[in-house]
Image 1 (cartoon, rainbow, N blue to C red):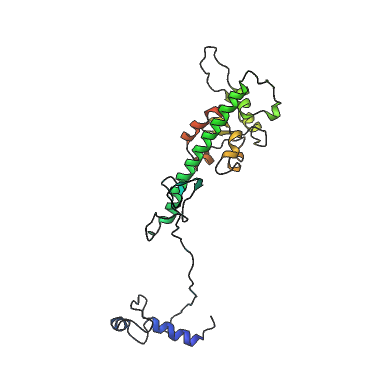
Image 2 (cartoon, rainbow, N blue to C red):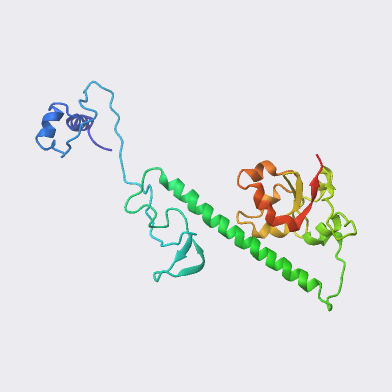
Length: 254
């Protein structure tokens, strides 16, 4: 810091109360630096002292974006801005004038989860709407039935090809068994390929959901062709799979 060592030592010792009793300095209204509290006094010239430079840093910002309880960003007029959400330090109003220590990560986790679950539900709803529209278009009388090659078959078609046959009475049969080798053979997850993943003893084809997954397609495709239950449970839970009954292939053989 280009400060002579003897000058630095004398300043440190003075600040620490050496040469003048800290209680006396406090009683007099503070030392020459205005300091009235001396928790480490007295400092001794014979002690090993370390000096360092302290500079201001941006530790946490109180934010300022106004947002609703579900994470939707609000305009200056208090109206929702479509498609825009916020969570964490960028937002304002959660902590008041000052943040309680330890609550910053909690804030990010709570509101991040709220926004994430909301967007995931909206994506699933949009996917179901698209699937319904595709089914309606395919069943139209004017639609021509063209069999696609197996290499480019849609996930829905793949699920239909491997579904267990009906018992003839209109009731659905038990899901058919899927071997580990068959699961692996259908886990390519590339363009136009199925993306089978084993979860909780069942096999799903997530090919149609890859581009809609909020965390990106890689976290799903990395599990393609294998049992991904352990990795899935780190973030999700089994109840969420009720939204994917339409892409259920069958049960995974032990």
